View 1 (spheres, rainbow, N blue to C red):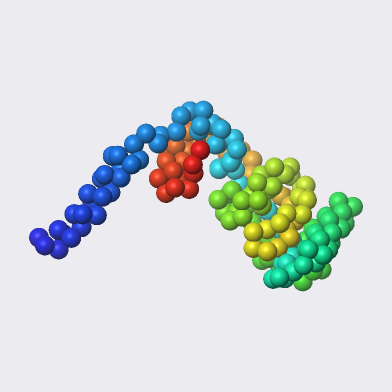
View 2 (view 1 turned 180 degrees about the horizontal axis):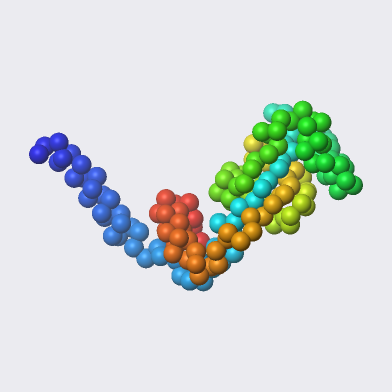
Length: 173
């Protein structure tokens, strides 16, 4: 009896949070639709990446030269060079290059996720400043067809996800 009693305060706090703190955070249909269109949470992309680290404490000149090099690599690919071979020429391994089929949530860097979900199939991004101190080029080789539900089909799952994110403080609209 006493063993279960120590969990009562935690249970009371959780009930209070659910009934008072989280009350009224349900998203409207327009919020859900905007979030669905902006984030494409159920779309899966097959992504390849070239990532060149920026040395810690690098000067602006070094950073600019790395971005210039990334633009040259992008140009080579645009002229017909194989993306993976260009990446391997920089000493990157297959696991560094091939991210596989990913959703937006699988891409930890929001700047990279935003760029990936704007790209058309086989397009190469402009150089992106990665959050881990790197310059990144990405290529989407496949957009998973036929498996992305319509907004109406996904609405219930989206509502659960956005509520979970709002409850954790991840989304503030």
